[in-house]
Image (cartoon, rainbow, N blue to C red; front, side, top):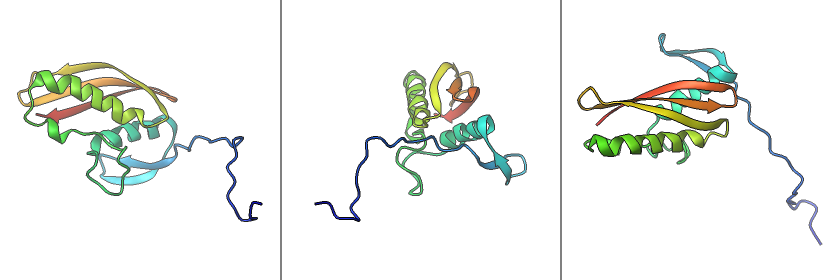
Length: 134
């Protein structure tokens, strides 16, 4: 006999997507102003994920952010493919992101790798970039 207050697992439950509405970051003004939704919220999510060093902040899940600091001092031949893998891994944890493609690396500045890429989201394609000191 199952007690009245026992939790029952149901296979017919459906999990819905979380809304994308969030606070809008005003980068120029250095403050939060209003709200963002849809594509604008996705652009912020990509920026925020790539700006957060993974495993460094207890307020974030260990699945959130990107690992970059251990790339410092490594050769460019190692950093470029590893950077592509890590960016893809970090962004694909977000279920709204379908794919990360078209990576282009610029290593013309000594000690820096600049990478541009496209993020395929449920709201369309977003162009993104990240610069890493090595």
